[in-house]
Each structure stands twice: as structure tokens, then as C-alpha cells.
Amino acid sequence: MKMHCGVLLLLATSLLSTGALATGPDEKWEVSTQMQMDGMSMPGSKDVFCQPKSEAYDPQRGNTDKNCTTSDVRVVGNTSYWSMRCTGEQEMQGDGEMMRTADALNGEIRMRVDGMEMTMVMTGRRVGTCSAAAEKKAVDTMVADMQAQGDAQIREVCDSLIESNAKDGGAQSDLAGEFSGDGMCAAAKPRLCEQARSRAAGFEGYSAYAQGKGWVAAVCGLQLDRNRQQLCPKAFAAKQYRFLNQHCPIEAKAAKAQHCQGFGRGYTADSMNPYAALCRP
Image 1 (cartoon, one colour):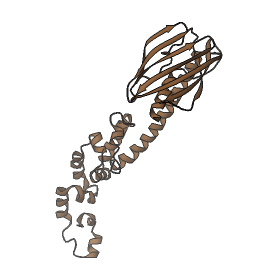
Image 2 (cartoon, one colour):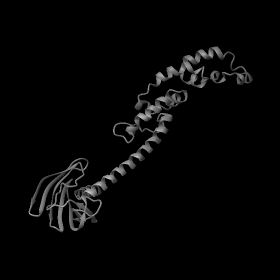
Image 3 (cartoon, one colour):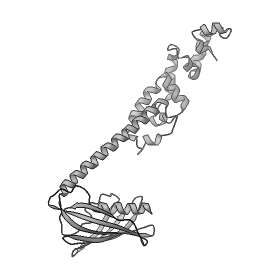
Image 4 (cartoon, helix red, strand yellow):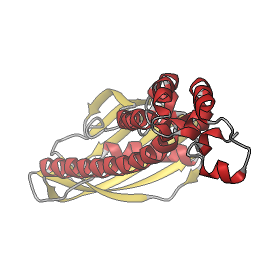
């Protein structure tokens, strides 16, 4: 029930147009709304909006919900009539009527959804003048600022996810969906994959990715086996003896045959052996 009420409230307010109230050639209106559903009345609200000066109420003006459309708009005297339909998650259909004089308006929007009928009753009065152009500019600026703030917050979150998941390959949690399709961090996927490729190309990073078996390698299309083939021939010279034992059986066997003869015969000798990390089982 709360969801349906919220959708209809959003729909009704989008047909108005709240915003800046500077003086100008247009009309400033104060409108009270009351929701009624299945015989019950919900708490009302009051809004002030600016509307370009006109003789009749236009239900199509200010409708910003892309899922809702109006049709069959007609004006008889000082009363406007129209039909409405909303698709998407909340599919609804209905109609509305609004009587407007120079200084007052009143009307209803009736919508039907899931076998229920919801009615939004609106009454209003003209309270002054305003500038619709100034309002639109102010609203556009506000929306742009909010979008910029939202984008900055999302980038901050995604940067944090990149840092933690590029380090261990995403072994701790499966966030593949956030970096794919329409996920929150989909636009940040190239940055994640750049860091992942760089890390997986090193001894420590490859070990973390191979042992953790996280989601990053799949999302970024990393070829870990190719990385291993490139790292194993370099591991002995780089003194990466543990890496040899864990990931390079052929190279480790050859290195042990050359450097581990006699290892394990005495604690002192073993501790002094520079290849002890390689030779230990």
C-alpha cells in the first residue's frame, strides 16, 4: 500500500512543478493534496509551484516521469480532462480532471492498480507571480549538483572496492555484478582491470589471485595460467622459492635437484643453506 501511495504522490507532484519562486510573468500557486484509497484518507500535503501563465490547466506540463504518459487531453470551459497510464514496476491507469479559474483550482486524479482505486484530491489558489524560466534554471542546477554529488560518492565507493578487490582478486566477497552490466561500478571496471592485470603479473599478486580464486579474474578476463608460465622461469633468479614450490613444479624440481643435495641431514647445516626455503618440503 505504501508503495502505491508513493507512486501516485510522485505522479501528482510531477504534474505540478515545485521550484524557485522569484517574481516574474508567471503564476505562483499553492496546492493542497489529499490521498484517498479504499475509503481511507491518508495524510495530506501542501506545495507551492510556479506555472507559466495560461487559461487552462495543462496536465502534460511538468510531467517528468518517463514511465507515465497522458492522452485524450481536452478542455471544456475552464475544466481540463485527461487519461493517464504508467508502466514499469508500478503499472497503473486512470484519468483526471481539473477546474481552474483565474485564482483557484480544484480537481482529482484517479488511478487503478492491483484492483484498487486511488484518488488524489487537489485544491489550490493563486498566491502571486513567479518566473518559470528562473525556476527551471534553479531546478536544473540543483539536479546537476545532486547528480555530481551522487557521482562523486559512487566513485569514492567504487575506488574503495577497486583497492580491496584488486589486492586479493575478490576472494572475500562476490561483487562481480557491481562491475558488470548496469552495476553501480560498471563504469569503473576498466580501472579495476588495469590494477588487476598489473598485480596478477607479479609473484605476490599471482599467488593471491590463484589461491583466493576470486571473481576479479573472470570479470577482467585475466589469463592466470599465462601469467604463471611467464613468472615461473624468473622465480629462481628472483629468489621466489616459495612461489616455485607452490606454482612451478617443473622449475622447482630442477632447482631442487641442483641445490638441495644433502638438505635435511642436520639442523645447523639446513639453517645455513641459502636455498633452505626452496629445499624444505
